Length: 81
Image (cartoon, rainbow, N blue to C red; front, side, top):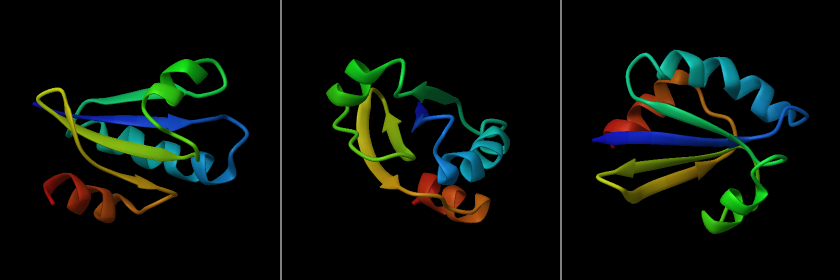
């Protein structure tokens, strides 16, 4: 099963742009939002050093990731990749 982890912060402008797009994506694939301000240990354990970072996990294993804002179509291509 595929799942996205969306690492972000409320003060990050690219995160603010990507947030509504990730909400739309969540209608297709589960998306877990991780606020790195409150879950810094979790971000560190996932090797997240910049936000926004989106990590695609399949069957519990990371498949790929991207950093920065992307369009809905780009994210869907990333998922189906």
